[in-house]
Length: 185
Image (cartoon, rainbow, N blue to C red; front, side, top):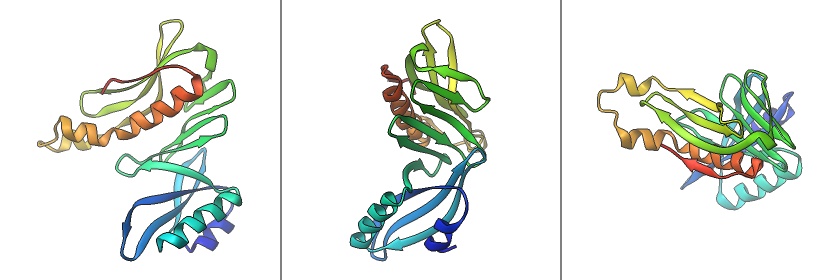
């Protein structure tokens, strides 16, 4: 699908810029985001000068800017009053204003959040949790990755590399909640 076709497709769109500048340009991707997750619609490469101009043009048209760690398949969008987190199958978390909605539909008040932290239990279980004022800990965004179990050479360095999204998402959620963030990985 071309960029124009992707922008004309139904649904909310976000853009993601590749980090690597190659001789043939920098990647620009368009995703649709919704309750069914983040879906790639289009991908192109643009020379750096054109890339920056296209990003600004798309932003002016209401196409938000998303971030991702492609290895994890987790995408997040920082909004004016919160953050949204998606994987390829569903919306994992949405914070806006004074409340957040978790993937299962549970609603969380910003005032109830005392701390946000990233975690990894074993090599497969990783994500972002909140410690509530009540002392309860709840998952905000979660991923289970079996690749660690399938790879006998998988080690702590791999885990740290594969969980960079946890810190980025955790920091964005902590900013929304106005509480400290701890990286516990």
